[in-house]
Length: 357
Ligand code: NAD
Ligand code: DAU
Image 1 (cartoon, rainbow, N blue to C red):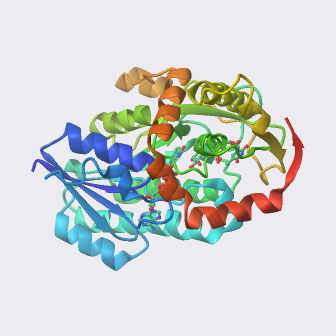
Image 2: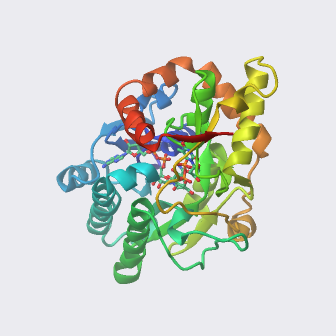
């Protein structure tokens, strides 16, 4: 094998798309997917590639330093793409400590292991940390986040991601570790856990359940199809410069309520329902605490330096997403049972319904 790459969090939503892309595109790389399999990790996401000779899954926890050191000793990684994290803002509001533990301590463990094991060989290595646009805070109606925007995280989730970004850059500045960071906007697509807005709405419409819109639905997100994020990660891993940051976005801003209405139209068509049926399921619920108003990325740098652009329009990507969730009933059924069901009760019972659409 030409290179051995560690991908952390590869059983999650974005991680599984990155693992699949690398395993299929680089048959001469050994891809080691290390994941704790929390409620968000699902090996069913990778059923199609699990028997490939250049793929290996290891169940482990990034907060367990001993495991990490053993893994580094066993595999002698050439590169790391670090996605493992607690990723849902609402969970971070209920339970901040899990986020501090995994996102900060877990990242430092990986940095320490890489620093130690790669000593004397930094020039051939890459530590690529996957981060989020939420670290930049909240925009008003105008302006965009760029690589130069000052950090201003406002939720326990984004504060934990911001801390991990700072630590990654500190290891570059202090020890010369060859790190790259990218900050991406909201992803959507197949395999996303139905606690996040788009798959939650699809699942609820499918089951004729209310679609909970926080506040007035005026918050804006910049949506990117997950396959396009995975392509950007591939480019950055291979062509990005150590010490650099890349902002990735869809150039695709939507108010939540407009997005939900578009999704309702697509679901009406898909389910052969009379026009307007799914929209009747919309309910407005108590807003998320500290809810960021708007995220939007200016992706000029990656566009110019690495020739990356989103490949799908939002309508195309959403249609693919709806088709995938409707064709993968078993996947959805499995993730909706168990932990997710309890969590869902907790989140939405206390919110209650304020009024209909
Ligand atoms: P996800 O929640 O779907 O997946 C996270 C994965 O990490 C899961 O497989 C989980 O089992 C694993 N994990 C969690 N804690 C772990 C631990 N202690 N040790 C090992 N594995 C652990 O998340 P996602 O949406 O795929 O996000 C992946 C990464 O991308 C995160 O770092 C997130 O901050 C970042 N990101 C996400 C988005 C988005 O829109 N989803 C956008 C930008 C950046
Ligand atoms: O911007 C990148 C971030 O995008 C990632 O770093 C996070 O990991 C990812 O979870 C996502 O964060 P958001 O909070 O933007 O995503 P979420 O799907 O939770 O919510 C999207 C918007 O929809 C947000 O404004 C809150 C709102 N919302 C969400 C849910 C779950 C609702 O109105 N109703 C809901 O039920």
